[in-house]
Image 1 (cartoon, helix red, strand yellow):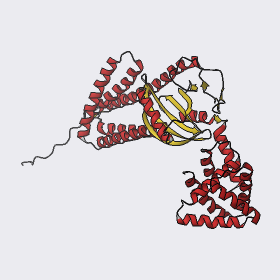
Image 2 (cartoon, helix red, strand yellow):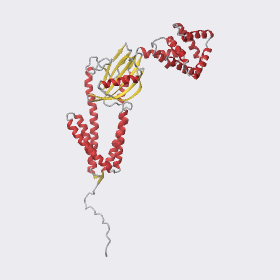
Image 3 (tube, rainbow, N blue to C red):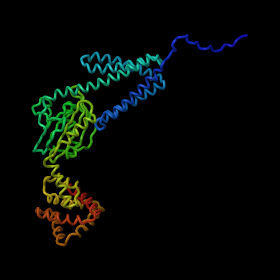
Image 4 (cartoon, helix red, strand yellow):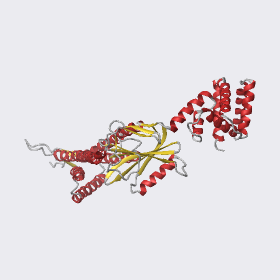
Amino acid sequence: MVRTPGPRPAARPARGAAPDSTVDTMKVAGVLLCLSAAVSVVVSLVGTDAAAAGSDRAASLGGAFMVLLFGAALFQGVGAVRSFMLVVCGLGALAAIGTAAVLHSMREVQIALGGVLLTAVGYLVLLLAKEASRARAAAGVLLIVSGAAVGLGAQSWMSVLAKRDFAREVEPGLSSEREYRDPASGLSIQVPAGWSLLRNDAGIFQEVQAKVKLADPDAGTVAFLDDEPRPLGFVSLDHHLDGVLEKQKESGLDPKQEDRRDVRVGKAPARRMSMRWTYEARPYAGFVSVWQDGPQVFTLFGAAVGPWNRATEERFQALEGALRFSAPVETALSDAQGRLTRECPLFTADAVRMIGRRIPPASPTEAYFRTAWSWAIRGQTQLDAASAAELRDLMGTVFSRMPPAERSRFAVYTERLRGGAPTTAAEDASALGILGRAAIALPEDALARLRSRVEQAVTVGGLF
């Protein structure tokens, strides 16, 4: 009988021989890439300050997404990605060897490059074959994990070394004084824990023009505080920051601007610009905050060695919170705001502060009132028809609550202001009392609407 040929049964392994055990190395490499992408995302979200490192965070998240795509492709068995990874890892290994040879005197850089080399070799071991023995796969994984650990360790070490070098340079110039006062500008600082003032004769940062220089050696941070008369052509705090940035670029610092935001420094509203730069092969992150106090413009420059994080931000928040304006402008504005809005509730806090920028801030309450009422008289004629009509109706209600004799005196006072005639402090104080008593008697909703219209009139009148 002729037998039909069929498939032969698989040969059984010899008794006592170990079964052939292999691992799909592309899947292993894919899982490792996906894990590294996840770690990168966590470090980006947790390890840096969002406001200070926005562009770095975006770049890190973008890179993690690309790594995740490659990891998913390898896990699915895409051969083209495997080939691409082999080429990249091979070139990376050669580049690491060549760079390490060139930078043979920089031990910390060589260690970081060693981590890159271990990682590249690990992926080469995994991806040279689509399947490999468990021992070979384990060796590849061990090399990759070791390379990542060495790279992270080298990065941390370099950051620590940079801060240690900075501390050694700064410490000889630290002052034992814990307080700074400048009666002329009214600025004072009670130096917070960790920070120290730098002596005027300190060798470091001699080229920096600043009234106050501070450093926190352990944190690798430094701060400079200065003020200057408001320059001609001053438009806004942002415009002033543009000039600061341009000067720093002209000095060779070449900072990279990150973002700008509103902050408070002491009592003053300020504008803050975050940035990064490299100076003498050392990476820095920092900011410049600017604010006005009367005719002066203040600048606070802060810098930290290495990356900016929450701990760094807290160090500078403590410093900013320690600044006090004991003189004149912000304190006087706050006092004037409280006095006038209490005695004559027609005027809002914003209107009072606007006036305080145009008259001496420490002026008496009646001087603030005279300026505010004269601006309101000028401004009411420039309002739109609806707003002007509402203001007239509301003021008519206020006048109706005045006793006849006081209403007559107040009308005469108003006409004198309208005609630009001078008034005495006693007349200003009397008019303030008359208007304030009548306004306080208004219902709350009517008073709120009147405040809004008066603020409009004051704002417009202050422009003329």
